[in-house]
Length: 134
Image (tube, rainbow, N blue to C red; front, side, top):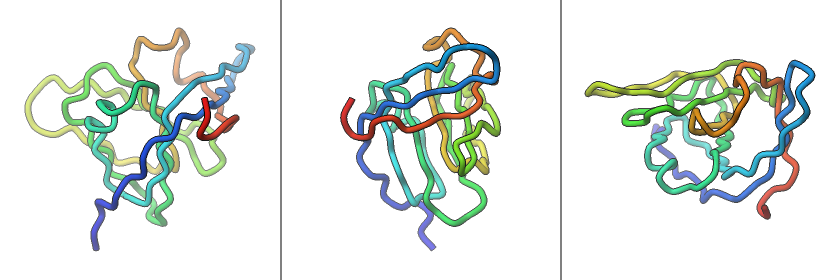
């Protein structure tokens, strides 16, 4: 079975991030990509986009292999099928070899660590506000 299915072109999208604390909702422009692939290489996607990346996985498998080889100072927030935060990963590969994360998330938001002034673990969930036209 081919696990490296084609990834559709990114669409500019607007999402609302809600937080667990009293922090107000934050609107974020991002590049939205929906894919059936269950193995993803992030380095090329990051190079091709100018916004944070929201990846949504449409495959039926429980886990997705996310390759973060060569990525430095990026965060990845993982969300379940109801867009609720289930985990956070930090990509900062310094050595040689590969760096991969096996995730059960149905969507992930990937962005540079310095981009936002909040603790990523305080995210509660996200909502798609506008798709394809930011």
